[in-house]
Image 1 (cartoon, rainbow, N blue to C red):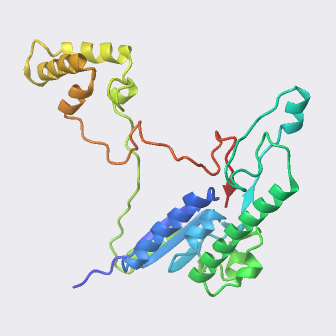
Image 2 (cartoon, helix red, strand yellow):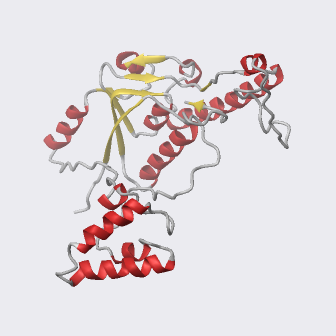
Image 3 (cartoon, one colour):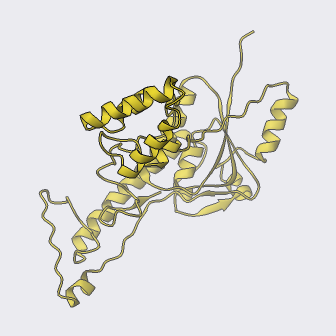
Length: 285
């Protein structure tokens, strides 16, 4: 007998960056393209980018007091130009391209820059609205794409959800119908003890303290021979080549990382909504 697999996703998010939630929604679409019916259960909130994810569901269920909506785009940043001017500090930005840099925290506010940025986020809203309308054609997109949010009953009245129920009710209903329900949770693997010592990344990156700590750990197994001695020998060879710990890492029997980004992975050149990026545009959904 052919299996009738389905996916039930529990979703709780108030949104965030345009790129991040656009990617998340696109990943959910892959489930549908693979022929897997997708039910999304909103327990507390699916707002803005969260609703972008939720709207792709074949069946969208929300608890009675869940908050949904907030279809809109926002960008904001402080401006310290006048304060810097009073302190006698000027900040120079050299660009190539008319709109390479519009509003920044250190640049004098220009109405033309504001107009351009307003145009940019309006375009993002247009894409947002089109995506929601395509995936939930039963709702009136112009009436709900106002940035407002609604509780479950009001969202149901506006066809933003298909049913009001808790995720427990949804899962128990599957059980009552004889389905096998399996739980799947994604968890990033915690750093290994070696990573906590600063070991990892490019050759020669480890701190001297980490090298000493690993040497001590390996030395404890020196008399017993076996793997401990082999690792210690690899450490010595690595030290001679400039990679004090690279060879030892290759010999380690520790399982590989399955869900963690390497410590030396490149960061994106442009980040939207990064709390640490003071010069980047913060476009949030």
